[in-house]
Length: 172
Image (tube, rainbow, N blue to C red; front, side, top):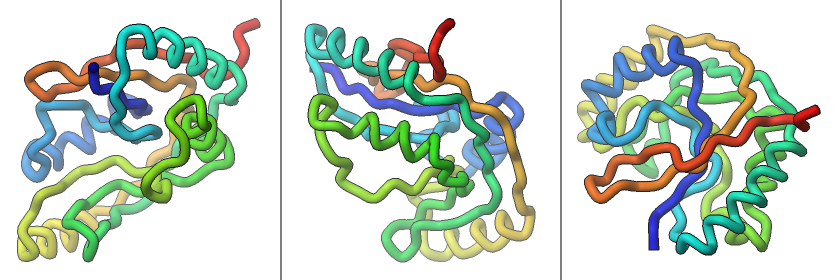
């Protein structure tokens, strides 16, 4: 069994901004680039992932490219000390998330969907308070078009890499 996940990678410009914080405040910095998780980690065999992959291609064809807007710094505190760039929940992003959580793709998600790009995690309460305060003042406002999503798999060292990329919109 291999561990898989589905994510959207933002543009290099937005990744560079996120990484400017992640390299200091996110212990997962070296394991995966900045991303928006659209389906949390799940396990599958080689045979299962082949079937899942063909379903993901269909999901991609039915989902239109959309505008990704990262517009503020927020936090999941008091649940946990994660600081993130909040991403606008567009109808297309919501439709993509829902399409990735049908019965034949593992069913409903465990948590409600909060689109975001993590920039800091596993901080102490004091660190969280300091970092959150300074990042909120810095502000953020990014807009870009998303036209693909990625099926990732986890390597033995804990890092994630792209297994397959799916374009959004019907190929004509």
